[in-house]
Structure formats: C-alpha cells, structure tokens
Image (tube, rainbow, N blue to C red):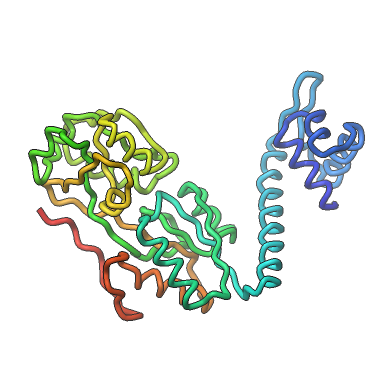
Length: 314
C-alpha cells in the first residue's frame, strides 16, 4: 500500500464520483479505478459499491475513511512540526477550542506564552465538543477548552475560568426595569441561544438553568457564536444568555447586561487533557491558564489554586 493509494481513496470517498475525483487529482479515470481496485485487493474488502449511476461507500469504506483522515492529519502535523523546528520553534501545543473561549482571556494567555516560552509554537483548532474529545483520544490535540466537564473516561477536566451567566438585553427593553431579572420574566420574551451542535457545553449549561422554570422557553434563533447572538440582541430581535465576559467584549452598541435574580451556577470554561504523565511544556501551559483571570485582574502566584468557582449570589 502506497501513500498515493490513500490519496486516491480519499478523493473518491469525498467526491463519490470517479470522474470528478480523477479531475480533482489531475489524472485519467482508468488509472484511478485501477489504483482503487489494487487497494481493495490488498485490504481484502470492497470499499465502494459502484453502479452505472452512482458510487457509494460500503461500511468497510466508511470505517477506512476515518483511519485515512487520521493518517493525513498526522502527516500534516508532522510537516508543520518540522517546519516549526526549522523556524526556531522547539515544541508545539495543539489547542482545541469549543463553545467559545472567554474573549478577553485568550489574548492575555497568548501574550503570556509568547513572553515566557516563545520557542513553543501554539496552534488553535475551533471544533465542536464531540470532535475535541475524539481528537484528544486520537492524539490530534494536546489540550482543549470547553464549557462542559462531563466528557467521559480518560480525560481530565480542570476548571480554568468562570463568568457569571448574564442576560443580554436590548437597550430600552422593558426588562431593564429589573436590576436582576427573574427567570419567569425572562421566559416571557423570545431568546437567542447558542446552537448545541456547535457550542454543546454552553448550550447544555444554559438549558439546565432554563429548566428551573416550568415555563417553556421561546427560542427565536440558535446561533453558532456569541458575536451573532450580540448582534441579534442589539437589533432588538431577542434576549440572549451568555457569560459576562462575552457581553463585555462585544462591540455591539445597544446591549445591556443584567444578572438573573435567582442563584445560578457560573459559566465555567474547563481545560481538558488526556490522563497520564504530562510534558513539561504542557504543565507550564496549564500553570499559565490558571494564572489568567481577566485583563484587569492581577495575576495570582504560580501554583495558586483558587478552588471551585462560586455560584452567582442573589
């Protein structure tokens, strides 16, 4: 089996059409078909079910596709690691981001990493939570951030940062008469919430809070980012629910934040990594994460453990 066989297979699997795959690979269709047949013979399985009208992957083909994609991802990471070393970097951290990381803290973290360990290259990948968990297990990522801690066996979760869960309210909205908004009052109005397919941890946390009321929420829109949520709130489209830092970092005019009247848990960002021994680079990165509170807060001493986040008091 040669690397070209895997490259040809990937093209056909993604196109599900031999002619289009051949065009994409800048080759004739006949040698492509022969190469796929050679691959099937070597594996001893049929990868594609072909008719005169369509090409579909078999169950074996779908399983093989998962492995092939991991092979090419590993090759790409190897190439980038070699290039990083050639450019003066002596280490690399692959960081997965899910649910949106508190905007004010990411620049502070990056600045601290560059200041204290500039020879370590940090690469970021924005992925859904389920993909982050799989990537940690498959060694595609070294560490991740998400707003959900129940991520299954084998992964360690460390509370990194916490923000009060706040209501984003359009300017001149009647709810601004409340300094703290009762949950039942909030649920009288349309809401714009994060899409659980994209921001799973964030969406689950908000859903748990909304379940405290017997009133069914009126969800006007599900969005993939807090930036879009703030834009819709600013336009008066609906109310939003997100962390205080996201609202504070928004550039949208006409958005006012209000806390909920009831006691609710904060929106916590967790650092995720595989269990087991950690590299020195990883341990120093975790120390820096724990040292970051917000751009306006003094940094605590290294090794200080602030303990579990407190709940928002009434």
